[in-house]
Structure formats: C-alpha cells, structure tokens
Length: 126
Length: 298
Image (cartoon, rainbow over all chains, first blue to last red; front, side):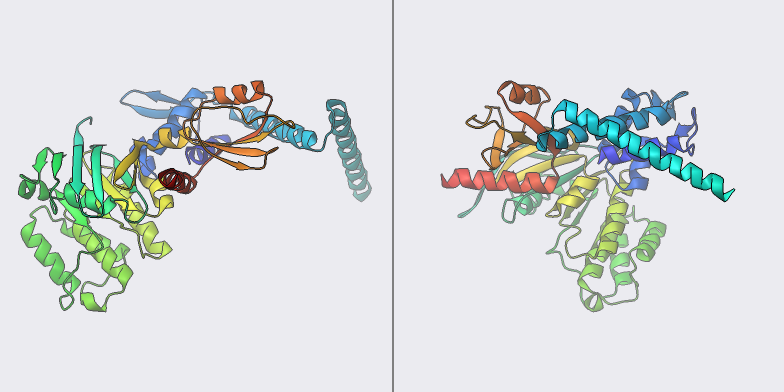
C-alpha cells in the first residue's frame, strides 16, 4: 500500500503539481485524506526520502526536494523492470541471451521502420 | 507519544470449552490497532476483558492508565465502545439517544454529532426499530464518536455495512487519529479494512496472540517465493517456511520471516528465483490459521 502512495506522490511531482521546495501535507493530514493508517504514510515518506524525492526537516514537515530528478529516474526504473520481465519470459521460452538480444534488435528495427513509414505518410499529407 | 493506551500482561481466562492464554498486548496512544482472528478465536473475549465486562482469571489489564476491572468506572468516561450485541432502544428515536448520551458525557460534541448524522445519512427523528442494520451500526458509532473519547473500542465496526457506508466509517476512523492523543482498537474479519487503516496488527487464534506488530513490519515479513528447480533438486532449506505449494519443479514457498538474503540462498542451492511476491493480509491470515490447524491435528 505504501508503494501506491509513493507512486502517487512521484506522479504529482513528475507532472509538476507539486513543485520542488513546496511543502507537502504532514503524515497525519495525508493519512486522513487518503483514509490509510499513519504508519503506511510514514513508510511511504521514509522511502521517498531515501530516494531523494522529498526532504524532511524535523518538526517542520516535509518538502519536495530541490532536484527530485524524477523524470529520467522513473523511466529508468520502469525500463529496468521491463528488461527483467523480458529476460524472465525469455528464459521460460528457453531462449539464449544471444537470441534475446537478437529479438531486441529486430524489435528496434521494426519500430524504426514503422516510424519512418509514419513520417513518410505525414510528409505526403503535407 | 510513547505511553500506552492499552496494556495486557499475562492475561488468562478459562472457560469450559475455550481459554484465553497468556495474552500480552500493547497499544500506543495515537495509533490504530486492527485485531484479527477467525470466528471464536478470542477477539470478543479479549475486548470484553478490556472493557471490564468480564473479569480475567489472572494477569493485569491497564486501560488509559486505569487498572481493569477495579477502576473501570473512571476508565469508561474516556472510552467509546461499540459492539454488535449492543442494542439501542427500539421505540426511541436517534435524537433521544443523542440527548441521553449527552446528558451522561459532558464532552459530547453537538456540532460534530450533527455533521456525522449528515455524513452517515441518518435522520435523527427516526425510531431505532425503523432503521436498517447498517443504519443501526452507524447510529451506534455516531453515539460513541460524538463523545470524542480518548479510546475507541469497536467490535466489528464495518460488518454488515454497504461499501459506501464502510468507506464513510473508515474515513471517520482515520480522521479521529488526526488527533495524536486518541487511540482506536477495532476487531474485524475484513482484512482489507484492517490493512487499510491500522498501524498495528494483532493476530489471535485459539485464545493465543500469534503476532502483534507494526503493520509495515508485519507485511514485510511475509513473502511468496516462486522458484524454478532443476530436476532432482531439493527445495532449499530456509527458516520460516510456512507452506510449500506449487509443483515439484515450480514450488511456491510461503515465508513468515522473509529477508532479502534468502533469495541469494535459494540461488546458491541451485534454484532460480522467478518472483518474490508480497502477500495481502487476507492471504497471510488464511495461511497462518490453516497452518496452525494442521499442526494441531498432526
């Protein structure tokens, strides 16, 4: 459950709803508005702090870090997760690492082709 | 912040067919404890001892600093209690009940009570016997909440409520905790509710507390490991395996005291770890109770 809260907060920061340096609700306030326990919010805040997304000053509450650096980092994390999935399923299919990287290259070139077709179409329409 | 709203030390209670054995329980002020257990596990007995409604055979019970049952009159000024077998007067209206409670408890918060009436969708002119089950549950909760007691003790507060009413009640309970001096203990079969709003989870089974921990620590301890084993390889020996499911090549281990190092230990034993899945409270509950029953039979 704390992972969901972390995700929500990160998204708010990523889309700019919460700006760097902005104060975020206290743990108790957050717990009331989300209808979840204090301990869950506390956990989410702790993890976010560890990741450098928020910054907590004792007795003063928490603020969004000056440079949460979420954009690239979020995608990087997602990329990593997908890669793990690819390798896991590839292993299940009995593919070797070489076969897997070959498939990756094929996919990349297929997408590139599709893109250039799109571009050509767009040019024609102009 | 560190003082305890509820403290049980070595509490026992013997009945002919059931006994509560050596119950130790600590609930810190400012937190919510979800009390979970199967039917007949001892939840209500524990709560009744806490309320001084029945007396323990031995052991000490302290509630808001008062010894129970000796000092129960003083303790109850600050406790709001709602349980299923508590009845309101059928012929009287909700408003009559509100006036009655207000005449006993000077802390009664009139504005808050009116606000709750609206949010719980109850008309105070209505007689209790004309209310639905859900409305009665909500009316009883309202009567306890509007006193703003320091400790709320709720036996199955969400049982029989529709999803909207349940959401309102859960919202109200978390709102209570915006005040750090207030504490809630509630029992429930609904593991989702417990998982959502409690800070601390206490598991009871067959009259014994099997676990009482900070919810996050508790949930972190339980994991399902999905492994893939090469042919003729034994399942790795890990501490705290509660259940082994799946097939011989693709076993699923349920572990009660998970640590990240276990993944490496599995790989060393020749197994490949396909996934480490967190478990819901519901899954933990079922595994825990089943496992104990099997052991009791064996």
